[in-house]
Length: 302
Image (cartoon, rainbow, N blue to C red):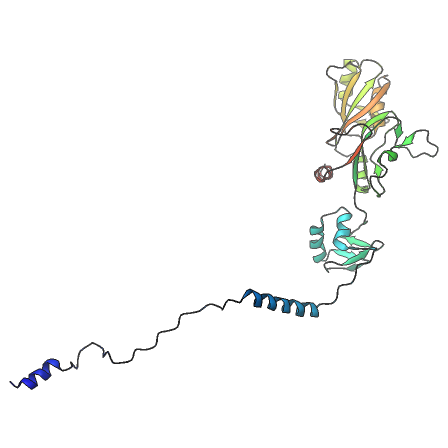
């Protein structure tokens, strides 16, 4: 066999071989997906500033608030119906009218003499105040001209500029808790005969209360044609039988006095120690304090 020919056979390429030719160029690799380029902080800040300038140019200039103007949501909040945040929701919902016109604009300014209608009710802008006084003797709630004794409003003078009034009446000899507010709804609520809040009184009598009379009082009685419901009546521990504790719903102190006078007892002293859950704790005689937010909520939920 010819060596040259044999060498060509061994060294020649195989036409049916599956091996690719190493000299053939390879196809280019696909590029990896790349995320957005990171913007440098300085460039990003400049872009945001530019966008803010364009936004301000497109906005209508804000009107300067006058001295006698107030934001609508604050006006509603001051009226005591809800918080500012809730007021914003009502405004956006179209449930608020100013001078008869629905307002949905946030930050809308109103004047104190504007008529604001909230969900069908006309509001007053004065902030609701609630002040608790531990009333001393020789002050009265009466406003009669020429009154011999001083008025209880003197004791809370300077506490607020709102036109507050006491809830219920107290004569000069009655001491204890007296609540003041400019919330006419609350005043009306606690003076209605049907109101459900309890008051506790400590009463001093001219003589010991007979047990049979105590039993009769506990069952309730009729005074001037009106049924008086007594929640609880009892002797006070470690005190003479002339010292009585009385719990009932009426805020009229005259009712308390009339209960015992109906059984021929003279009432020497009445001290209201609890009013709708409020107590005299940390409130010395003659002092006053504002109610806490939670106390106000509790009173409204009574």
